[in-house]
Amino acid sequence: MIALEDKVAAISLIQEACAAGSRKRLACELLGISLRTLERWEKEDTPKDKRRGPINSPANKFTEQERAQILETANAVEYSHLPPTQIVPKLADQGIYIGSESSFYRVLNQAQQLEHRSLARPRNHQKPTELVAFKPNQIWSWDITYLTTTIAGKFFYLYLFLDIYSRKIVGFDVFEKESAEHASQVVCKAYGTEGVQEGEVVLHSDNGSPMKGSTMLVTLQKLGIVPSFSRPSVSNDNPYSESLFKTLKYCPRYPRKPFASIESAKKWVLGFVHWYNHDHHHSGINFVTPIARHEGLHKSILEKRAQIYEIARKRNPNRWSKKIRNWETIERVYLNPKHTNRKAA
Image 1 (cartoon, one colour):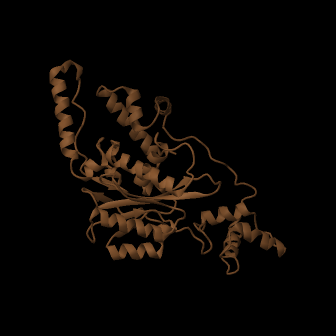
Image 2 (cartoon, one colour; image 1 turned 135 degrees about the vertical axis):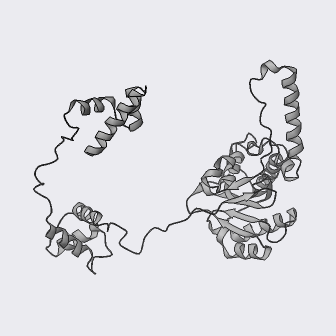
Image 3 (cartoon, rainbow, N blue to C red; image 1 turned 180 degrees about the vertical axis):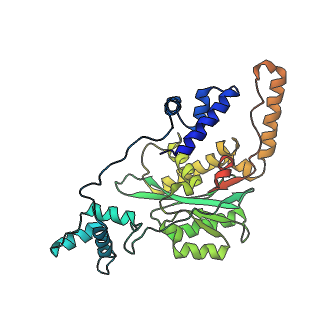
């Protein structure tokens, strides 16, 4: 409901704007009212709100004593940990009726007491801290995905470790089960292959048992790798691994038939990793291969592309209405970015 003084001020402002040359409809839109509303206000002697609320209170409205009784009952030691759906039946078993479940909920809500009434409250999980990679082997991301087999209900488990700056797959293996011990083996091998120094790498993952198992955590501590975890049930907190799995499962190279043995699965994954690292032009790093970016060759590749485009534009400028395609190097890669950095991620 708009106050009388606000209506008078709005009419005055619109009249001033129209006197200065503005259109009345646009002035109304700027103040968030319709032209029809303004015309109604101007016709009235005073722009007083003439709408009438309910004259009588509802016949079934609770009295203050009844509201107090509901609050007193809900806060009693016997019922303070129970929701109204449990309180009302218990009262009925004792031959007591104060109000329905919805009445209890409404009164508790109005008293700002409609919270979880037991120890089983949902935990508040904060978004993981923003991480930024500006060179290889700063931030790794990893996860496990299923590979189907010829035996119904049986799967192989593919462990993949990814460098988010270069998108290079730095570690992988296939096992017949999920475990922290297997994850520990893969990360140790990747650590040695990449020649990482203690304290250089942050390893991000979700909250699965292989990720948070004691063997894996002890291994990370020994290697000097800092663990980072997603929020429970929030896949967006681990986007690089999820994107990699989608590329793996939907690429034309993925076999149409299930894997007959773990050896055949490992052989296929080995071929996929080689293709992904050496041949796949990744859109997230301006269409250079992960291995080229990981080894620092991407800048010269992108500079050469920009030169070729400049030459093409000079040769036939009529075909270029704007600047050439952006072949600049993506300097920073963000994991769990803040709102202001999402476009750069």
